[in-house]
Image (cartoon, rainbow, N blue to C red; front, side, top):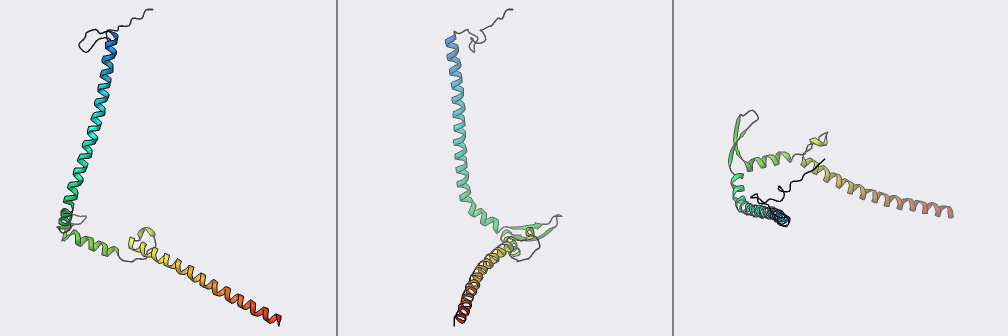
Amino acid sequence: MEIKIDLREILTDEFGNIENLAETIKRQIVSNLTNSLAKGIQLKVNDEIAKLIDDQIKKVVECQMPSLFSELIDKEYTIVDDYGCRNRTTTMRNQLIKTLTDQMVYKKTQYSSEKTYFTKNIDAVVAQKMDDFKKQFNFKVDEVFTKEALDYAFRKMQEKLQ
C-alpha cells in the first residue's frame, strides 16, 4: 500500500507559483490576521454607526415629539366600529377624558379580573385603612380590658382582705 501526498496544493500561492514552506506559512498567517482584523474592524464600525444612528434618532424624536404629540392629541378623527360603520368625529384628548371618566367608576364585582384599576385601588386603600383601624381598635380594647380586669381584680382582693 502506498500513500502519496501532493504538497503542491498547500505550497502554491494564489497565482499557482510554488512557494517554500516559510513563504506559505507567512502567507497563511498574514491572510488569517488580515481576515480577523477586517472582521473586528467591521464589527466596530457597525457598532459605532448603530450608536450614531440611535443618538440622532433620539435627538430628532426629542425635538419633534412635543409638537407632534400636541398636534396628534387635538387632531380630529372619525370613530369606526367593529362592523365598519362610521360614528361621530372626536379628538384623542376627548377620547382619553371619556375613557378615564368611564374607568373612574367604583363597581363591586364578583371576580377580581372584572375590577377596574380604580376599583382595585379603592379596595386596596379601604383594606389598608380598615387594617389600621383594626389595629388601633384592638389596641384600645385590649388596653381598656386589661385596665378594667386589673381594677376588678384589685377591688376583689381588697374586699377579701377587709
